[in-house]
Length: 549
Image (cartoon, rainbow, N blue to C red):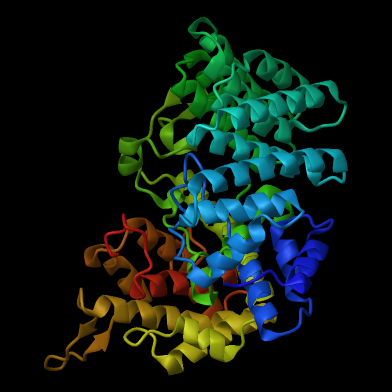
């Protein structure tokens, strides 16, 4: 039976002091010298715990994969330290992980996790260091959900009391803390409290942040009576229309108007929908430019980084850079059938006759240039998010050529020599040698796809008489993907990314034929993501709903 090592406990407490996240604690703890091999083993087990995210309590997100099993020796070490750390957030985190793993007595871990989170919330609220409030509200949320799921009535009462106190504090304060308040109200709603009055006050107080105000209106609608629903629906659409009027960029104005028209249609407000559509016709989308990473919300950046931090190894982290589906590429019919399509593509397309204005509907089968432009923009945004994750992978793993080769290699579609070549493309990318990265990676993408398709569809033409044989090139290979059972949305995404010269990025042709200057970083990230997507199929890492899994 292992015993607590004082040097490890001291190092853990020192690393946790003033840290802004568990990832930061893990980073500091890894760098500390704790002595013998036994103490190093315990330290490494605790680092693994700090880098692991507990499962969502009530509604696990669809994109979350089942965490790999934790070695029993690590669970023993986590259990050993769970009740001996002074930091309540660490205590709650360790008990939560043990609860997820089914290790030990469940009631003890439920109460240990929830109590730790509630104690941590109070300390974070008192810290007032700029990071404390958002973390405190997340702690309240987890504690409340645990108390609800496992019927801990006293914990539930304490979480409710603390959350109401925080909500009143934020409503009475002068600071702009709308987002943490939204988390608190959603937590109270989860705990089956009526927060209609608080949500209405918050929607008026934090009207400047459109996303936050919409969140408060959503909370209000859940608790308000049916007689108020039409009024709240109209407030949602007016919020989006007002945001469009003050937007400082064509893309942002287009987004708000699109969402206003979509919500008006969904909520049965035809007059507001017509107003939004009329404004849409007068808005010129500016698809030629793409905002940089600085325009991406900090929370989304953190989420992308956290997914990498939660990966057990380099290969898993690489697979996590590949989204399970490209929503912007979904066929309209499929999306309308399951209600998944958002934005302009859910609105009957129309244009204004300038002599009227009279709405004129185009033929159903006509190509929609705006829809394609939105898809290309969606690809660009995926590239920005992928670049964030690739940077995090490099920061966390610092993989050399041999480690990358081992992570990428596949006996059938990417044997070791080719895997080493692709690994060099990633190395070039991390050195910001983007031309080299693209020129090395693109042929590998084509070769991987050809090998994947070889057993499913013809990719080689046999010579017959005077007609020479040959192999299908990238454009034909991409068109063959749906027939081979691969998702049509990815086939279309890769076409727009690599070979469509009319409305797509056309990166393969532009780069390899010397028709473009050095492409931006997020375009190269998309090329590397394409290789990872194809390899993830070969390694059997796709989600269960994927027909090629």
